[in-house]
Length: 331
Length: 300
Image (cartoon, rainbow over all chains, first blue to last red; front, side, top):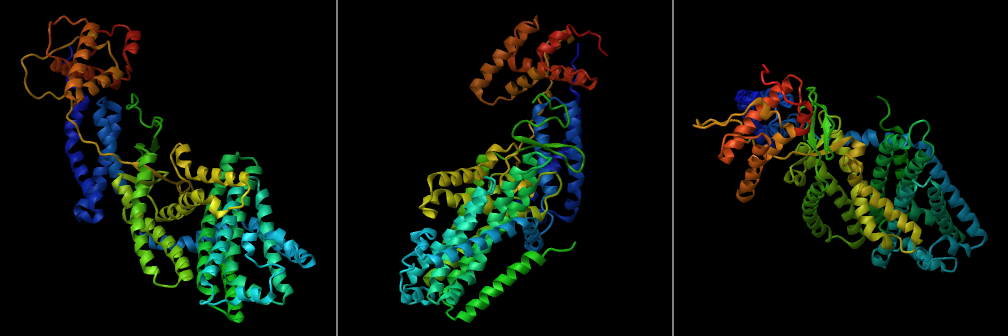
């Protein structure tokens, strides 16, 4: 006849006090953070935690009391969070992220960025040349909603109006247009990224057509000798916005090409490895879109002088190039 | 649950096993997707309230400027909210604290701030972007060819619903940052069922042969039945189980007080099974018991 007590019961009686103590400390930390503990208690916590872990280990081996095991698992899990919760403050890492991680991620896909930039450039040149030769082509390259009445047949005055309209004059209409432009480019960005998974073909198409549109616009303004003014109008925010679109496209292209050419590793592993750089770039691009929107909203209609506009455009261009090529180097 | 004796055994679905720096793997329940969504909504509410204040603050300036400024400030607001609250809250924003879930490093070590930064900034790509694009596809791109619009929708959904498909319930931000979101439910230390302190005149005793009919699985079922709080269901369940046990072990001791009988049987069975487990004989259930035949009565 066996009428002994289970061994685990003895074990539990021995250790119960320290578990209770651990639980009390853990609850205090959970409620008011580490500062809720005195200095002595702070030193006690890791000791109790390790005792708790060891209890768990023993209990797993010798006890069949399920509620005890669940209790110990839960207690140790909570203690784990308390002991191994965040130790650094957030300030420095945010700074480091923008200073290093983001530029490095962009450099990691620099060939794709280059390709997308060249594609856009090629599209722009093509659009420009073809619209010059045959102004009617403008209609093909630029969707109506975007054109908003501008086109080969708009008068000089109408065109000029857009470039230099100030606050008093049709502010709402222009806000609408700038909003549309912003939307359009943001959309391009999203699409390029999303569709990049389809082996990059749509990305190529998108970059080129955006360039076509740009070139077509440039062409009609150029035909009226308003070329320089046109670029002065577009570029201050356009540098940032087009840059963001290019980054998105490059990210999408990278995804697509990883799916196609994964080499010796499996597709999923390759994707997992690339996804970090790609995601960071996509995130950076989003931030750039926002900045472009801000520049657009603030500067474009307020700042009228061509010289200032060009200065702004050049400085943003230089800034981005320096940021992405030089930051985060070394170490 | 029958693998509680094996350290480092494979985690059940909805759980992960993390190696702790102490060398003892801990099994954690993953936060349920519903809980994460709920926590996110709570956080959104807080951000939304601040956003409304922002709208008022910004609307005093002129139109175009105001819109652009609002978007940028709102972007900053929501990102900084998550960043700060998850850092200050040791891996848990306010919404997460409500739901008792935390962010933790996927490899089991300390959570570093960089991961928090990355996973929160990534929320723009894996949550806010799909959330704004999906309802607005026709607005964002009115003249889209059907197929393309559909494709974008599919992709956005795929990104947003990733936690449902991933075994570790990670969203894209978690994947990139290498973090996991775990739950930490509260459990109380219930009294040990085998701990009968009061002296009783009749304690039921059992032979090794009788105890040998059952295994660990039955023991834990019995534990569940004994801990059953519900007065009506509990009484019924206990009566049924007591009946079954008496039949199985060929009880000859006459009528019994149900609860005491079950408690004593539980204590004796657990003592016996634990003793055997220490010696390496782990009897999983009654079928295993039957296969082994009668255990020898004079065991130690």
